[in-house]
Amino acid sequence: MVLMLMAFLPVILFMFFSSRSQQKKQKDMESKLKKGDRVVTQSGLVGKLVDSIEGRHAKLEIAPGVKVTILRTSISGLDAEETPKSKDEPALADKK
Image (tube, rainbow, N blue to C red; front, side, top):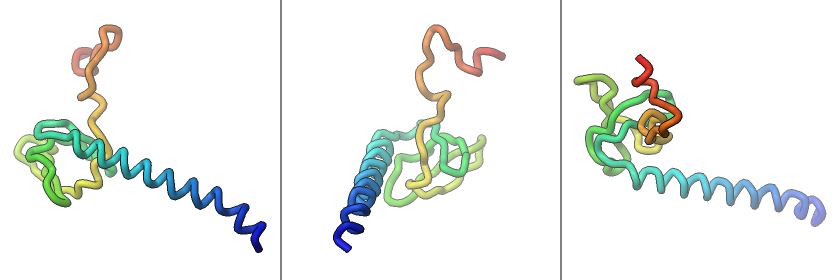
């Protein structure tokens, strides 16, 4: 019995610490978001933050005049086009 517990203990500890680090990364990302940031949700919606994140909800503008309220935890990060472009890689909008 003790041998089985010793075999599963590292797996349980790994799962615990990896979930803590993911929660910390999510919280850090949420604290850096501000009004006007272009974000992507877990469901794939891309929009601009209309208001700063307060409480459990955030407001996104997904099209001109179309605003939706989403859960703060469903924001997965900033949109890739929002990141600064390098000199070698022009943004997709510049290729038109």
